[in-house]
Image (cartoon, rainbow, N blue to C red; front, side):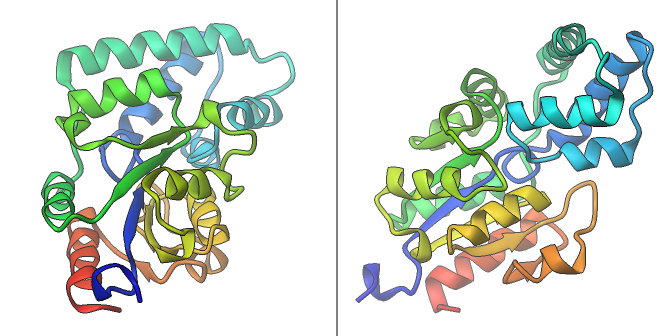
Amino acid sequence: MSRGGRAYAGVVFDMDGILIDSEPLFRMAAQQSAREIGYELSDATYVAWMGLPPRAVEAAVRESMGADFPMQAFRERFRDIWVAHTDRHGVPAQPGMAALLAALRARDIPFGVATSTQRDQAERSLALAGLGEFIDHMVCGNEVENGKPAPEIFERAAAAIGIAPERCVALEDSAAGVQSAAGARMLTIMVPDLHQPSPAIAALARYVLPSTHRAAEVVITLFDHGP
């Protein structure tokens, strides 16, 4: 029988766009960095990078921006802009997420994070958003061999919380993340952030919801009343 009589026993969260409202900030920093080194980065090109691990982002950047794109200068300027902005303004938590984490903890439901972001940046962002105290288990993009859209990062996050992947609920905002979570056989909830999913991506998710607040309500319903 499932944990506590529930069909699902754990939750794995993406971070950027799900736990924290960072994707618009990432886009701003990326586009400003590109302009400062003489390139234009469109919204559509940025969206295509969303959710990918660092190595895949670098390959996608070179493919879309050209082989001569000064990656190191872009990376350094991006980080400077991101750090300066978040030092001044913080990182907002997404609506409903702090309450959801508290509710899961109160119900003794294990949860963790599967993020393509590198650990030092992820820990800093969660702390600035006031969510760091909730997160005991996190797998980051620089800690897996095959990042999103491969399922490895969600499988490892499930192992970290001690729950079989097929008994986990996953929350994601990007196409790569939905592919990763669905590939790990998790019940996947998608909350599109900067871009609506294609029909093929939407079909991989059990729910496609308009807000993280609504996603939080659905997660609690799944655990309190079942699917």
